[in-house]
Every structure is written in structure tokens, then in C-alpha cells.
Length: 309
Ligand code: FAD
Image (cartoon, rainbow, N blue to C red; front, side, top):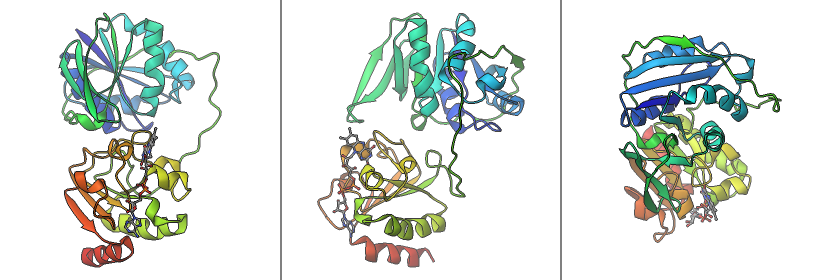
């Protein structure tokens, strides 16, 4: 069985979501190749070649594949698909965008967001906002799978796979127009070791940033938010943690003024240590918290800041 992993990268380095997807791929087969698509992406391919267990890196370079357009990914991957029994990508925004398209073009059912590989045709994935785990068995000869990165350990460095060029596909009907990147000195939410998240309790955008930003800076943390806080305009969209936001599993997650609705828990309950500050002792967040602090955040957060020194 041969497996192709489509790499997730930022243009200069492979993200650790790729290493985690390689781990899932290695649970399927020892013949794992990685495909890097991008413009001037040789450095990324060289980095991917160092991931332990990778047999070969395929590099598709060109303007057409510079921005992860699903149509260009499809046009690049379909000619290669005949050599592979499974195609894996991390369940990131990009992976969720191109994997269903690839599956449709290959006439197979996409297998999304797996958290465990049981065997070559059987996988486990969360459903109902993470409240149940579904075991699915696929009879498709070729499998297109997205992998929930937080569920897999990152494959180690230490490989020295060869890098081979392949043709980059064109996307004749779509064109990249522009992108707006959020610039931040803080770690990326999905990869941060510590996340501090604020909820509706913060009451305004000014209060949200006045409370959350200094705490995040003190801890070297990323800032997250509940959907209620995002919908109310207290925090930007890309801060949202949960079923319809980002799924995070940091070493430490601090939830401030967040009730703990199941849709929020779906995005953070696999965090290693969960701390909750909430003035309602019956808030559901305390059911998943390792440390619960029943208090008004207005007194608790300054106390926490003082204790951190
Ligand atoms: P609330 O539920 O209003 O909770 C505020 C909490 O703050 C309360 O527990 C209160 O006791 C506490 N509080 C108030 N004042 C203070 C104070 N001074 N000090 C300390 N604590 C205080 N939500 C997400 O977060 N992410 C998602 O991805 C998501 N996806 C969804 C998808 C669907 C289809 C649906 C239907 C809902 C989704 N939601 C999601 C919304 C979710 O159901 C909740 O409405 C939301 O998470 C609530 O946000 P919250 O906890 O900030 O607000």
C-alpha cells in the first residue's frame, strides 16, 4: 500500500500538521510520500524530506499552485493518484477545501477528520460535535482522508528522503485575487502550547483585549475566543475555538468567562490541562476543567497576573 501526504506549509517551512499527518500515514503503510505544492518551495520540500519515515518527496512548483487553490491541487494530484492507495491531508482550512474535491473527482467517499487509524480500511472520527466517535470502514479502493492533527503525535525529524519534481497542475477557471494575512507576534492558535480564551463575559472588544492580551503576552500564549465573543465583535473570527472554529489541544487552555457549550468543548476538550474561570459554579466548563476557579474574572485575572509575576 502506498500513501501520499499533501504537505501543509507556510511557503518557507512545513507546519507540524504535516508531521502529524505523516504519523497517521505511517499507521497505514511504510510507503509514505509527501507532496509539496508551492511557488519556490524547494526549501519546504527539503524540510519535508527530513521527516522520519518519508520515502520520497514530490515537489510541484509554479504560480498555479502558489496559493492552495483546490482546483490546482486537484490538477496536480489526479495524475499522481494512480500510484497511491490513500491520499492524506491535515484537516486544516486548505485540506478541508481540496480533499472533498479530490474525492469527488476520484469517485470515492471522502473520509474526514480522522483521529485514529484502526486498520488500512477502518478509521475513527468524531461526530456530533465530538460527543460520539464513529468507526467507519471504507470499501473504496482509493481513500481520500483528512487527519485531525491534534489527535496524532508529530513524526520525528531525522529522515533524508530524495526530492523529485512533478508537474504542477493549472487551475484554468479560478484565479487567486488576494489574501489578507493577520500579523501577530503571538504563536499561531492551532499550534500554540498555551491558549487563553475569552467568552461573552468580557462584554466588549476593548475589555476583551485589555484582559486577554496582557495575560497572553505574559504566558507566551495564543488568544482564542468563544463564538459568542466572536459574534459580538469582541474578538476576530480567526480566534474562534470550537466546532465551527479551530480545534486546539494545547498543553494548557485557560477559559475565561466561557460557559462551556458542547460546540466550544468540541474545539478544546483534548487540551492537556484545562483551567476555567467562571463566576457560575454550575457552568458546564467545570465538567471538563482540571482546575476550576469560581470567581469574577475582574478579580481573578489580576490575581493570576500578579501570581505570574
Ligand atoms: P455564554 O454561554 O453566554 O457564557 C458566558 C459565561 O461567562 C457564563 O458561563 C457566565 O457564568 C460567565 N460569566 C459572566 N460574567 C462573568 C464574570 N464577570 N466573570 C466570570 N465569568 C463570567 N461556540 C463556540 O465557542 N465555538 C464554536 O465553534 C461554536 N460553534 C457552534 C456551532 C453551532 C451549529 C451552534 C448552534 C453553536 C455554536 N457555538 C459555538 C455557540 C455555543 O453554543 C455557545 O453559544 C457559545 O459557545 C457561548 O459562548 P460563551 O460561553 O462565551 O457565552
